[in-house]
Image 1: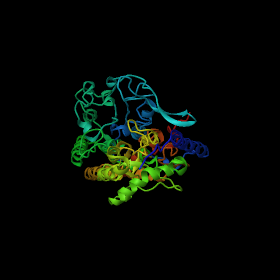
Image 2 (image 1 turned 60 degrees about the horizontal axis):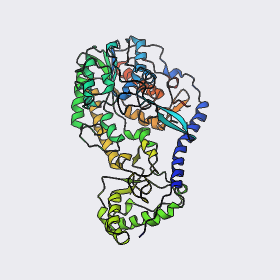
Image 3 (image 1 turned 30 degrees about the horizontal axis):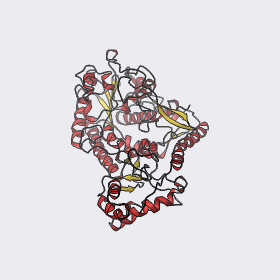
Image 4 (image 1 turned 180 degrees about the vertical axis):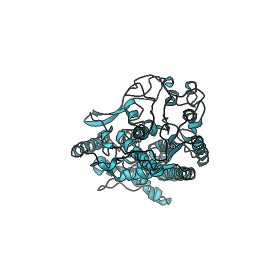
Length: 513
């Protein structure tokens, strides 16, 4: 059996162009539809009488991670922070006796740190080769320190997990090199030995919001499930026991001085555009062109025959000439078929080349609708895998997308199970301590279906849905306003306050060139 060079450069270019043009078409549709939307203010969002009910908003402190800080478009920048949900909520609280609310604003509207690797500036849409493409700006300034201008009431720290909020030294610049500190907390920590919760308690809060735990799952998900379950690394899922201890300890400390507050649970990762934008089956017959027949004859057909004989025929099917085809991926949860593939291909390829094929395709299968292709994988599909010989070196087509490119069905289940466990802890604590509870998970699922405010409908669709920023993980200003309304409704329901909701349409959305 001979396997020729089955993917030529020109079809690969056409495939990449198709992928890039998808975003452009979506953006054009958004521009056209948004022009006809009305932004009239809905009186249902207002409340004529504003009171605090049984709550006291005079010293409101917000704790959490990037979702609390106002992180959007891949980083933290000043205008994004202004649109953070705590800042919106605090503004409404000021109508009912709420006090000043100060945030550790970045020194510019670009973000990033010039003296730290891996911290670029914000994403913006740019026209590249006829397509609107998100591009990160160069970082605008070195890591600064604004602690002396505090105290700050927004204590959201991007990247923080549940157990980081009580980690002493998490704000020490000296610990950055050790990986035990966070530059976003280094900026405003009250001391090099303090922790986030302690910085909140020293201000004697009368009211708090806590939205933490997303990163205890999200890091695993955005890495394609490359981490472990029960670990403490950035790509690991935190164990339920560790989350329970950390979260319970934080909440008990926050209420120890008599403060009231609101707890928010965690959305499923499968509800945000980072995991829902790239389809599992983007390979059209037109994209594959004449290579489709060759692929079936020289790669998919032989693999299908060998796997069927081994009782694993469902892993690979022939490519269709009439319908979209799924991507080829690696699923590390599968039993390896390397030996069977090597044995089956040895007569035609020889032992060495057959063994190479066995190593590459031993845990390969075609993706299904239950797998989630990462947003950043879109730029990888159809490109050449470095160090892999032709003709089997085209990602997603003749060479499997790797573990980091895809959140497989089993890895999605890992994330869902952890989220459910963490959410159970959060809801139980809210109920037992008499705190308000915001079901952010349900809210995000509602947003997937569409939520309308004053004539404008928002969804979680990437860019065109109007509620998420360009990183696909964090909301934009309008999305944060929707979240702020959710917090406000939960607070009003629990404490009998009448804080008015806001009109999301007036906040920062996607900026077009």
